[in-house]
Amino acid sequence: MDPDKVGDPEYDPKAMFRLLVFSCSYGVKGSRRIERECHNNMTRTRLTGGLKPGHKTIAGPRRRNKGVLKKIFRESVKMCMGLDLVKGNVLFVDGTKSRAMPAGKRPARDCS
Image (cartoon, rainbow, N blue to C red):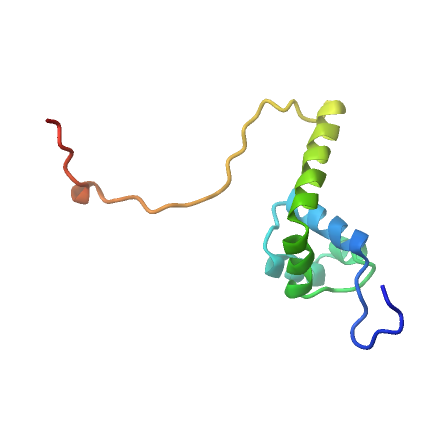
């Protein structure tokens, strides 16, 4: 953080990581949704020290530090398992949606 830099104040990297981890733990993953939550949710505003980052400011550290975030989430799960908060035997699947082909339009299978 450079105090002599002209422009908007820089965000504390620790605060940005806290914001990302907190938001993802509550299922808010998109940077625009996190930005909206920072304006509407006092808890997220406090995590950033009262500053309200824009969606590009939120997306930047996440894009640049994917590996670090992955390690943070992995360690969080290990810690929760160590504290017996979760068992670790549940498989979570993401919410990917795909279009199904209508029943009447399926290609015929060749059974020869």
